[in-house]
Length: 61
Picture 1: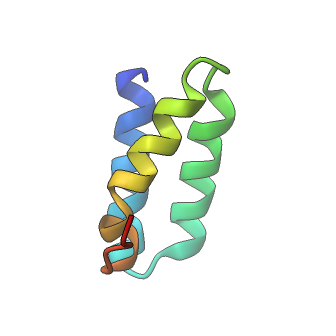
Picture 2: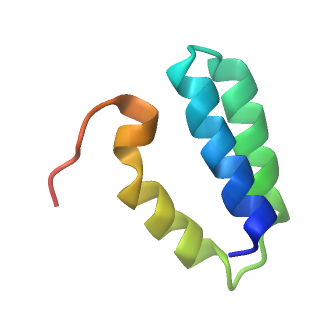
């Protein structure tokens, strides 16, 4: 995925940790909407790998 999209997702995670959920969702959605079809699987994997960044919890696989 492009660095700008990764940066936006990382920032969305930070906003989530600060309880700024509306801002985090808007930023994350905008980043995902800009992604190409080829980037979508990598974004899904990144989100799965970083669940803890958003929720504070790990999801078992």
